[in-house]
Amino acid sequence: MTISVDRLSDPAVRAFVAALNANDQQAFFDALAPDATMSDDGSERDLREWTEREIFSSGGRMEVESESDDGRALVATYRNDTWGAMRTAWRFTVEGGRISRFETGQATP
Image 1 (spheres, rainbow, N blue to C red):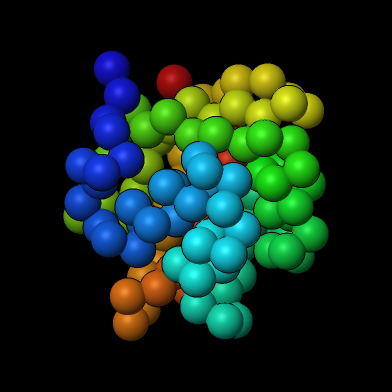
Image 2: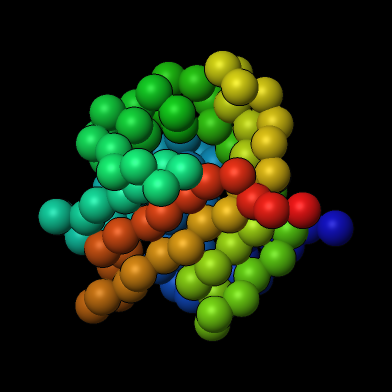
């Protein structure tokens, strides 16, 4: 069972997921703080380079399975044209209504 994007609890996370699924780069970066950072499987990544490769140029989409931590932690099936589908965990830090950091990686079963 998945959680519809419009039912996600945190407005900044909701905007992030909606923009990601719509492949809307402008809305995606509008959801982020100007100096936002991110990591993938525990390694720091260049946010713009990573999002271009893993989301925008590869048709990334996220189906949220569950949320916790007031909507700032998600487990989702993430799929893109490069890697196919995988179960992923996402954790967000929100400051001033925008995401200042997100961390993603494979979810534990």
